[in-house]
Image (cartoon, rainbow, N blue to C red; front, top):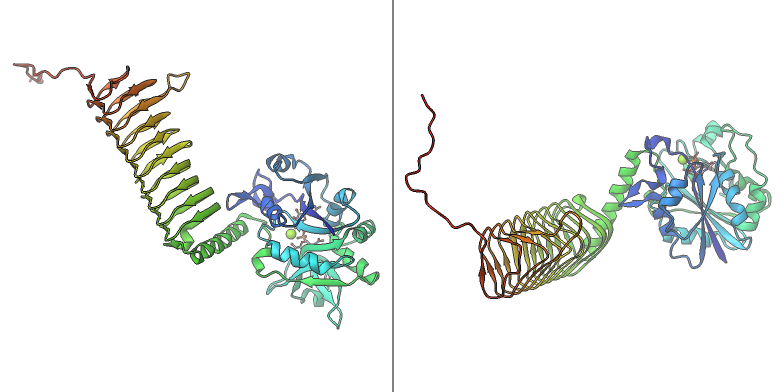
Length: 454
Ligand code: UD1
Ligand code: MG
């Protein structure tokens, strides 16, 4: 049976005290709403409808890459009203799965059980038992355990308030039946809202069986209302990722000081020190060691690479046996070959460095091509920008660049060339020769340092 997913995301999110709509706040680097969307990803051929609020165009624009249709709910008149807005776009011969855009950790496995429990003609609720059920809608059952209705906290009697089983808000239900029921909802209740939860009583009245399903973990159904709850879910998410990676054989020196905001593929015996942030898609080869305080974003790292402390590496590829840092900055479109060393306070941008070359101290290398076994001395700068355009620096194999050289691009240094320290290279340096652009050293005889007159 076809599946129509309806994600409710029209709420204001006032308690976030933010200019950013709540469902766009990131968890593990990804908007809350996108987590919910991703949990429905494995359902074959599902339609996704997202109900957004007045002024929520920002949400729609930020998430325009999702394969979803957007439905505006101009005024937030309740969860039942929100679902009503989406019904015209729901296929009549489908199961509707209702989710919340601010409940990000729901898993696909739980949603699958919920959809299965609804069957073709029924309704299934995701419920959970809470130690403290305050604020939630309570699940009212008869003496045989059959669900009768859901009563909201504000409408509940004292005995109903004592019920610990609560409504998570997520449900799966036959579309045709749901359409009939939401059309009959009223707002005669304590909050003057159209409650989606009232469809339960209507279903029971029509002898439709209500099945219930519970999540594996209570974190799956926790919503984000404020920043404290957001951080709680973030920490839980990170805890789960860290445990999973350790089970796969990755050493994490402290799993509570590791953040994965994307996907990490790691080889055998990878070791990650504290305060490492992984973003986007990161691949680490076998026996890679990542020192403390590193940020790795969309990078592919070969085998036996050592990344020492305090590096930022993004959109780059690093060959086997390379050594980076401490304090190296590797910027986009950089490709470092095998056994390359990039050391302290070196910035490399959009450059290719071949096997065995070393850039060990205090350099800026941008738009460059460096051959193999070349040594770049301390303080070397490629002057790649003339204020309007970027130019290329080409440095051959087995080159020795002395300390504190400036290479004014476009410029080429031939294989085996040597540049004397302090050279400002404005013309090409020939292969195999020493090029130097330094004022000759002199000693001034009989010179005296000026002295203050008494
Ligand atoms: C709802 C349920 C309650 C359940 C609780 C779980 C109803 C009437 N009550 O209560 O039984 O225990 O969730 O968290 O359904 N939303 C819209 N448009 C609206 C109103 C809400 O899109 O007009 C969205 C919100 O953005 C949110 C979700 O629906 O994602 C739930 O709304 P909220 O106001 O938090 O409902 P509760 O009163 O907490
Ligand atoms: Mg709520």
